[in-house]
Amino acid sequence: MGFGSRLGGRSVSGMETTGTRALRINAVELLRQPGVTKPVDVTVTGADLDVVHDALAGEIDVDVLLTVMNDGIVVRGEVRSPWTGPCRRCLRDLAGVAVAEIDELYQVEIINEEAYPILDHQLNLAPTARQAALLELDAERLCSADCAGLCQQCGVERNTTTCDCDNEVKDHRWAALDGLVLDD
Ligand SMILES: [Zn+2]
Ligand SMILES: [Zn+2]
Image (tube, rainbow, N blue to C red; front, top):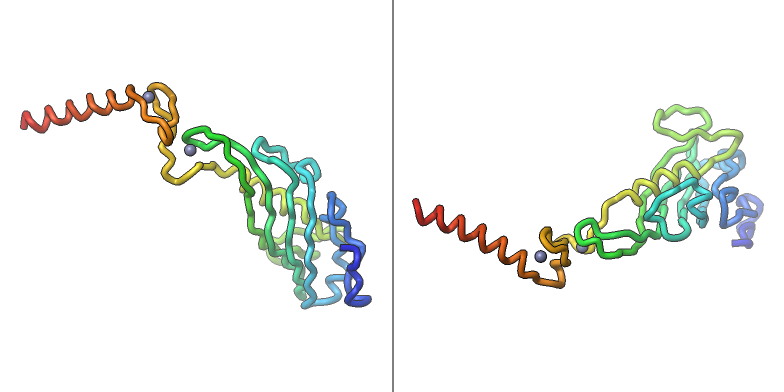
């Protein structure tokens, strides 16, 4: 960034690319130009967004495109949050990037009741990004869809280890079932 005014006087330049200030966009100039689009790519910390979450493992990337409409500004894009955390079944440490899609409308006069307000001439991406990041960070993770999890008896991870206790339990169950079938 930094060469933002290359397209001429109409573009909104001087945008910071980190920190909460970069998430507050001057809407006055944009709203005069229906049809104009403006990419915003900002990296913020969890603290910047007031996102406190065990799973968050780095800075949050807010990468959106603003599209100016006659009655507001549409914000579409992604919020990407690096995360770490245990597999829900086998508790193995996992890491990845949680991607939340954003598709929101901001309005000065709230006509659409789901729109976010443009207050003091500023479109603030922070509440939208915060909500999106938290939603994705809350998702439960599995190392794989068919993760076998931990043995309920001895606690070994059954993806990689076969344990005797587990087999014994299974054998007893089958034996009981066989017995019933035979009795019939
Ligand atoms: Zn697992
Ligand atoms: Zn076991």
